[in-house]
Length: 294
Length: 312
Image 1 (cartoon, rainbow over the protein chains, first blue to last red):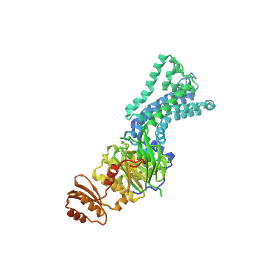
Image 2: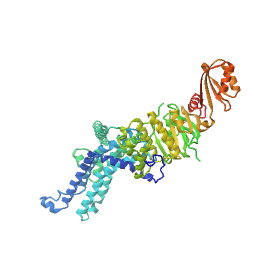
Image 3: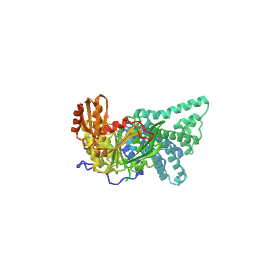
Image 4: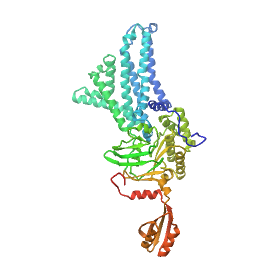
């Protein structure tokens, strides 16, 4: 089918492995994302706090700089679990904002003009499709949560010496695990919204609503029923509990608000339920078949 | 060699509705047309062959591959052009086709090359860098066609490919389809409302009505049989005229207002019909001489009533 010959020739070349084809979706989505300046600004904005956190770790481990800054209290610059809770809290919020921008367009663009049957008429399953789209958010949000979290942990380990790494190695688990559940929930939720709502602005609104309206309803439920279980609908609260417990800390912010904490297992269960619900929605919406008339 | 399509008691239900009622048939030709009125089940059959619908009973095979049990293997052979809009509006045409080719498994560089070739081949070379969303309806059809052929499939499934195309564009697309069919060993399944499209591109037709097979007809054999028809409008002694013609070996069907359809055997010339008419004092007011067309086959299939084996 060479251009100059203008005739059809069957393809007889090599093919890529089937398992790797989901990544084509990821590659194309990233190419589209990086064309948008706003996305680049948002991404840089999400990474800026890392520089401040790294600077803090540098100062905390450098007595000379502390002397120059005339810092006398040794506790002022302390890099312990509490500090990593703050890092993860800030970065997961940045991930939330990034997700609100990127997530809504990932599937909607394919559904708007019925492109889904074209994907699924190939050796490409719905699971491959969701995996390809999920990988976009997974890589992106990893890049602003656990990856910088581990880099900061490594920086602290490198600068602190004196066996700090061995006494704090357990923190690697909550850094990765807490980020993972947050990324999983955000990604699946925004993919589900993207599969339902085609307009970006509306979809972004729906994602915000998903976080704030159930939380409000849960508090109403608590007030009426005199219980704490309504907080199972407050996803940010649940994540804070998982994060604080993961780093063996009390959730001080929540404590100061006079809230009793619900069990961490219930928090995990609730977030996993949200993920399952998002998968159910995706399963319902991502169908290749067209409308059958008559 | 495996038949192109093999249907074995295929029944498909969507919700509580049975759309396809136990279809059974074997289609061996390389180019198969799928005909039927709206709601006959053509798109459902295509979707079932692609593995989008699971049969509630029976099975469907394409080139010997079960569409349900081995859907992925089957889809690796298929190029599909859906009936409805199917594109990514913000992507340029060539990028869209390249994207689809890569998902089919072509390496990025090959996909790029084939996407350009497919676009030039379908006649959209000049428009390939424009977003697909800005294309006219006919151009979108061609872009869909380009994505269906870019990865070099073995089975090409085209659902209403000429929808929304002006006559020259339609003619061009039909030529392309014929050319592809002749230039390679590709198998073609073409669903259309337009009998002419099917007649010009296919060797065999499957006619569906109300989810049942109304007819399976091998057009090549029909063409070879070369049966001649006379459509006459007469005034006068119809009954004797008809019986005399039948005595000569013709088959006759008499309709209202003196219209007679005569199937001519090979050894009878038209002048003999005139001679009989003159002998019997019958005036022939109009005569139309033609061969059996797909339209006749289609209309005849539509007129028949159903039988319990899934055929009408």
